[in-house]
Length: 223
Image (cartoon, rainbow, N blue to C red; front, side, top):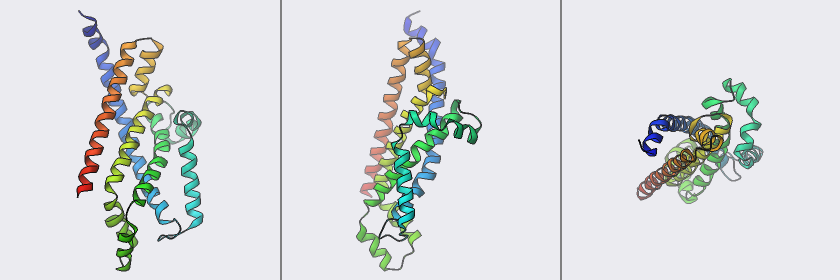
């Protein structure tokens, strides 16, 4: 039996399980991060000076909070909020233990990306709808979010790829996934083949997601 066959038979099931765990962490974290980050990004836009819900105090607090959370490297955040993670999900290890820090890390980044995407919408279009007496909530849904779709998609693609990188680092706390696989087998056991396969899978995954995001953004830009 060749070394490749031995490797496939011995490690393929573990690699497959790690890929599934990575997808679980990324999908759950992305869902909750969008549910938090998108409204937060909209709120940052609306409370800015000169906009519909102008409120300097609220905008300043949100802006500072987002900046603070975005400035903390994920690996530090991961350990810093371990007590909070355990309080929320009952554990600080495994997939559950990784989801909370991933959300705390990703949601502010998504909020900022959404804010930047919405700022790209032509202010003249917004003013035109306001002059017709259209309510703010309808302008948000039918104008802001619709016009900013390409930028929103690209922003979410960036957030998704960042989350994948975060799951790799989350392996340090036994979160499972490809990061944990690379750490346990590639680093601790010096099984270089496992490390190479893990890196290859991550590269392919990132390339595919970026290509899909670019195509979707281009499609909506034409519309």
